[in-house]
Length: 492
Ligand code: ADP
Image (cartoon, rainbow, N blue to C red; front, top):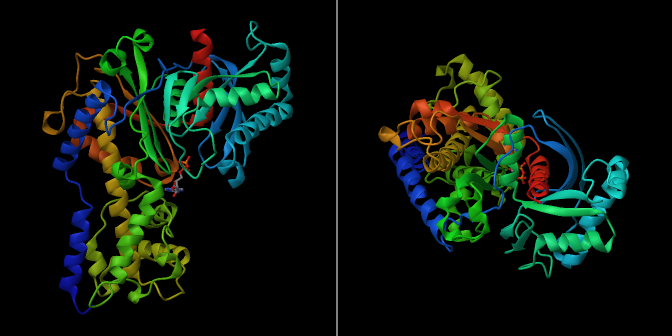
């Protein structure tokens, strides 16, 4: 610790790079708002506002039994969803693995596998199979079981049951699928196997989140995913989507819009600042900068373990362990990162409670980064916790910008920052701003929501922030797809 001033200035420099103050949040949000409106008026904008053809949200009174198929997360899932009409549902599900060979082989082989999985699922839950064969109580007019497909890849949708794959992502590369209608590919596979299942709706995971939250909470206008990636869908007035012209969708009052589905790496900076896939990696880079600091290392005595040296070697989950260890069971203060404490050369000067917290962090860091006992000092522990907090706080604050943009767009608030007024006259005035979120980052990261709310208070003002109701979109993909299927059967 021969250069406390140097250390202090390096840490301050990093901290500054990761800090977004209120003015910056406001300017990002108003920029997003402009981009929203460009994206609604014309195709081909970086903010790709994609109409979903889902024209409303449930209120919890819906009933029926539906199948759902979910492709695009870690596993392929087949679900049977029974909606009880009282905001509750029963869900049976089975997960199936999608092998590398299937992901990269012929599309027909992949879709045959999807159909086989549905068949296997139906065989294991005979109740539905019988319905599928003799109509049962699902739909007397058609001896088929309606199925909703959650397909979380970039798709250009032209109807609730039609969508063309723009490109594969997430390691999928099945041949002869790009530019084809995904529902058609799936239905052909069902038909080849003589399954009495009809794919009636195609939804994105964000739309699924909004629909399932709307069903269980009695309303929801924004669905968002904070998981491996980040994306959202909100309810827009069709009249505002001027690029749709006077087409059939214009007849509906509202339609869900998916904010962004671009896969162009250069245009995904926002997602990279936020998503679970990247936060660990960003933190790893901060830690390495400290390990490699000249003339003297600031962290781990200059030793980087294999895990720390490895690209994407640090998972976002590990950051959540570090922060949980720091805040303890009481939740604690999330943001007194106290770079100052980091610099205390003499741990004896730290309050005993702080030492306790740092000891917990020390253990987590040692275990998860592969250090031997004694190689991680309390100061190292404090630095890792500080880096994690910086990275995740920035993620949460940027997430708040998107949430605030939708609030502005939907009329929950009439301005931002000191101009933020609850919009009393507008359609949304006085109503709660209900949001359904799915994804591990939101669900498991301690303090993520509170950090997001802190930024929302700046952006929307405390009064409107209090109206923001955020809840977990439970089983969003399965229940959402089922609700999409329900809408399709109602449209008929
Ligand atoms: P997906 O988005 O793929 O459907 P998840 O919502 O589970 O699935 O998100 C997975 C991402 O969440 C991964 O990037 C992982 O690093 C991150 N993650 C997993 N567990 C946690 C956790 N406890 N806290 C924060 N992030 C986590």
